[in-house]
Amino acid sequence: MSHVAKCPRWQDHPIASTTSTTSLTSRGGASTKPPSATPPSPNDRRLHFWEAMICGAISRSAAQTIMHPANTMKTILQSSRSVPNKAPLTIRSFTQWENARQLTRGAGAQLILSIPHGAVNFAVLEFVRRQMNHVVSRSRYAHVIQRSFGPGMDFLSSAVSTVCCSIVSTPQMMICDNIMAGTYPNLVAATTGLMKDRGIRGFYSGWWPGIAGKIPSYGLTWTLFEQIKRVRTRMFDRPATDIENSIMGCMASATTVCIMIPMDTVKTRLVTQLNYPDLVPYKGINDCFRRVLLEEGIAAFYRG
Image 1 (cartoon, rainbow, N blue to C red):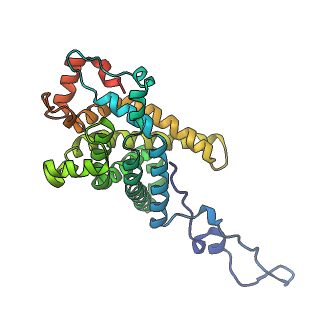
Image 2: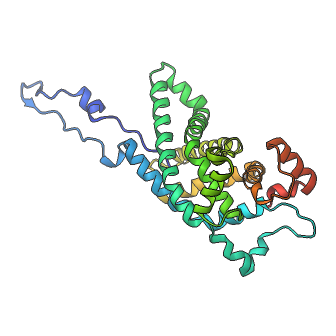
Image 3: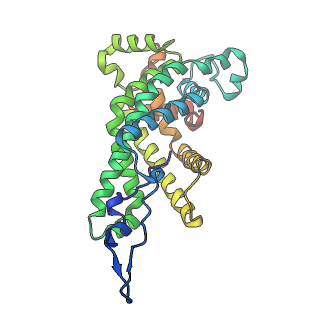
């Protein structure tokens, strides 16, 4: 995911603002026209809010659908709790057809629910970043702030966006994670089941675990991505290609996963514990982390 390049308006273009539109008189008295100014390329302009929503909806739904089997495997492995006389699932378990066919469950729900999530997330993120840049640019210390606190501003904009978008992302997480874990068979069953158990609150019971995991994860990913882009910009004096953006995104995501996977496992356990009604439920993040560590060992946090 790459941020939208900022481009000044045509009337603010330095050539347009400093060159008069009237004729200039040379030393010999001849009248000459100023050099024509080339307006910025349409490809460099900012996206409108609705354009960012469309791009976000398409990109997120496509990415989530393509990666759904891997995400389902991760969710199943993370949500699998230790049950007496039953060995926990491993990656090798999915070489068996009985387990492999589970990797497509919830794909339709993921596709449908990723559209509003992606639209809101990308549009809000770009809006927050634009407003922050506008405020900073008006300061006399703008260059110092950008140089010294650039990563912090990236993290803050991502955190604000994540909280704002949680009204959409939390129900998607509750529905999709429970379908992937096997609690419910499909989107309709998950929606009616969560509504029946706790009403609207059932869709937001995983809000705090989700926020506690997403803010550091998304914020760290976005910050790492921006820093990698800055390093690449210093090395190559040209815009990044789509392939380069994808590689940089993979690098940032992989680093974040290695750091945040224990918290992601705790979040998944809390969200999907409805799948184990006969076991003692976790009371919260701290209780879940402590019990998983004591009952299953540290390796359980990296099972997915």
